[in-house]
Length: 121
Image (cartoon, rainbow, N blue to C red; front, side, top):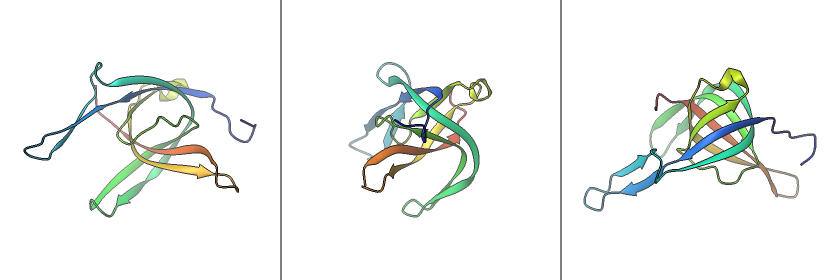
């Protein structure tokens, strides 16, 4: 990694267990550990505002922060709890969008994760 993209911050990420009822076809996310997985990622966090529309769902998600990371394990619906910087430590976010960012050769350099504030405990 070069000086153009630094990851000075850290976050605890909880990846939920995903299940689906065969009879109702309803999906469920469980954030309790175990069976959910907790990982630590290096990243760069920024507060931002905006919204992201999902045309196939007809939903609009607010964007409260952006996380840039080279960790390819990030997934939609992950629960992100920043550890550093201290200003972010009291917040919890859910990943509502992931965009891979590529270099001029098409290689993925990092992920840009759109975060929405969460009330999960």
